[in-house]
Amino acid sequence: MADPQIEGRRAVMYVAGDDPDARKTVAGLAEEIGFEPIEANGIASARLLEPFAMLWIFSAYKFGFGRDFAFSIIRKKGAR
Image 1: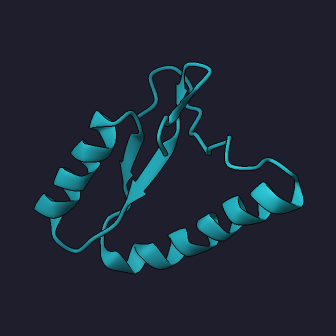
Image 2 (image 1 turned 60 degrees about the vertical axis):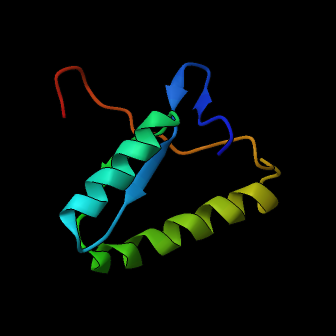
């Protein structure tokens, strides 16, 4: 998380919370430090993010990636 850009691509950071203003603030902070923030809506969405973290941890240890990798989103041109 100290450097969320790898080979010119930004790591994705999902943000979930019930307060839309707070969510936007946190997404803005994530973007300021180099992440690609994606607002995942309400706090109920956080439950979907927990397995994502488990996959990251599994990959770090099981596949030997260590901490020097990140997830990113690849979009077709013009897609939002």
